[in-house]
Length: 391
Image 1 (cartoon, helix red, strand yellow):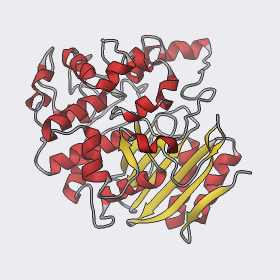
Image 2 (tube, one colour):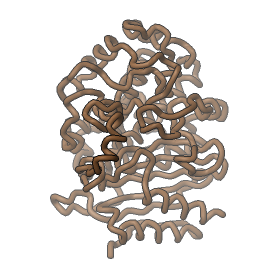
Image 3 (cartoon, helix red, strand yellow):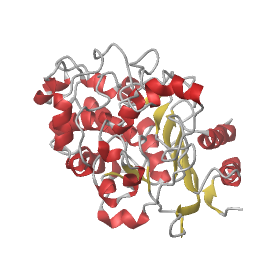
Image 4 (cartoon, one colour):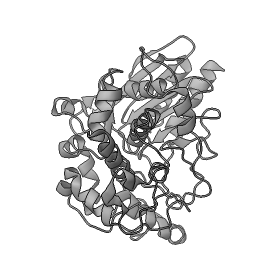
């Protein structure tokens, strides 16, 4: 039996039971979960092993890469600039980034970028990992890229390109990289252990991602009939395959995500690093004041969580996954919380989420990769336990 560390507020003891159940089921190697209610932390739990290769235990300050959960932070930065009047989502992105308008992109708006409607889910230019981490080669490739569909007519998950597209607009507006802006304007005021581009000083606190059979980084065995059905998405030339790699050979090896070089770079759709408490806290500060600071005011929160997309997500296997201004929204695929609930999941299972109707927010990080774009039984069990506690 795995030793569970941390604490829960009175009434939230069932969350500890749910967290332990994930380990008992063999679904975890190492993980942490935190929750806030009405701006106060009510759950902070951690357990297991942070690095299987060394046996390093998971501790209170263990950090983990959270893949697309990072997109939620990039969305927060963009929406904060919108609230300040420095960024207009209705403007063409080229208004802020003149080189972007080439090859049929003059009418792509900032809103299109934030809501995955730009038709730029991958690049046709193959780049090395060194070029990707330099930033500018990716920007040049995206400037030259022609949209795969007419912008605004469909939505498809921009798994990696989202971060560079939105991040470059933020850089043009602020004169700072997204990682620098996030730290100075949001993470430091809230005293968060949360980065896009980690400093070398925290590298020894970062856990190691673990691939698993049928999970991200592992082999996905499909029978012939299912493989045929999924080929347009997951085949060698499938749209999801290309989006997950952005057609960049740099990401063919899953192991790069455990490298210090990738941790220190800025990939604002995918390489964020944090602890669970900071992840829950940043969402708590989106829906209310925390420690005297708020990320988004009520008006911008309403705008950010207003649905901008309809119909199937053409890259995420036509699932009913809908977006506001950068945030995933509550849907039949993600029935978490009440109306207005929002957040973002990451590959493998990580999650940052907020439910304004109950003032609950969640942060979940782990190292064992599961398969899915919207969490799995681990987050379902934990969030259900939290809602049971306040029912």
